[in-house]
Amino acid sequence: MPTIAEKILSEKAGKEEKVEAGEILECEVDYIMVNDITGVPAFEVFEELKLDEPMRKELMVVIQDHYVPNKDVDSAEQAKALRDYAQRYGIANYYEIGKEGSGICHQVMIEEGFAAPGRLIIGADSHTCSYGALGAFSTGIGSTEAAAALATGRLWFKVPATQKFVLDGELKRYVMGKDIILHIIGDIGVSGSLYKSQEFYGTTIRNMCLSDRITISNMAVEAGAKAGIIPPDEKVFELLRGRVRGDYKAVYADGNESEYEEVFEYNASEIVPTVAKPFSPENTVPASELDVPIDQAYLGSCTNGRIEDLRIAAELLKGKKISREVRMIVIPASKRVFEHALEEGLIKIFLEADAFVCGPTCGACLGGHMGVLASGERCISTTNRNFIGRMGHKDSEVYLANPAVVAASALEGRIIDPTELELWR
Picture (cartoon, rainbow, N blue to C red):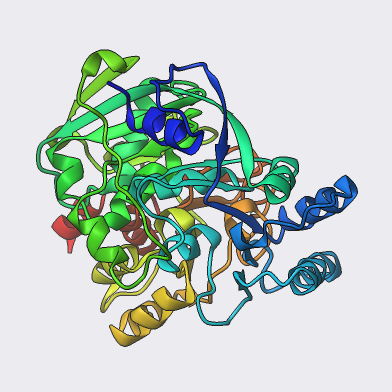
């Protein structure tokens, strides 16, 4: 009675018999994703292999997103090299900054129909696990592994043990998928799912919008997970209608809890807006327990840059001004999200609140550009990591939170629970 991860890996390995956790399988992959940081090394290694067989270019998705717009000569040269490789090998699935379908890689993979239930997708970026929200087995790999898969269309995997997370109950106002996953990571720790697959169930998950589900799967890797999978339902199928590339088959576990290494159960109605303090995603506290002054508020990234995230922040910011002591940066996750935000008037709300808004980029999330922190500065951020120096200087601090907490904190100039903001105003 296998889990979703076991079923997908077994099918992609062409095995009819049941596979076990810990077994090594060689599997056919559906897509290989690289970006402007990881793509060039992957192409270089592929060329070093000097194979007689042609590249499996139909599997390749190449996305410029981390250092765009290019911040200096080095990043410009890197982007040019990736562009040249894509042209030389005739990569059809190439996404350039500003062009149709462009954006942060994980949002693009979903919007452009590459991610789908039952698929095995690898990406040279650790947050490739995001596509588990659509019922895929997706996981991050290195550039060398990407090169091997480019050459053969296959890659070996160790079948992970699976943990089951069951969340029931109605969420409080301003509690989102970010709070769910931060609560779980705070409970089990950043090594609590080391090389395991997480599966998420319960009424809370079923009632969630896809954006919140993607946030949960995106941060599964922050607990060490190989994948974070949510069984697909009608919300997923509706998203994929007219969007998905090719056929797909939804995969479900057989429901035998004995197959799971561990089962965790949570009453979601007890979860509150949550913040991860420096310098770990497991260092979580209720937002209401903090009263920390901030210098920057960041709304965006592959974790929380979707239209639903922008809407809830705009709801809080409408008709108000960001604190004079705070700069707020808003980064939609894709060109398409940016366009939707324009159509709905959200960008106007952000600009009138004195936020800085720009096109999709990963820059600030990894301390690259477009929002790097100086020594001693603090940022409340919707991103996924808050390690030492993650968004800039080693003596800066990053606090992780949901979009509502980020927006409310930007208004007050300090970290607060957005419920408190409503009570005061």
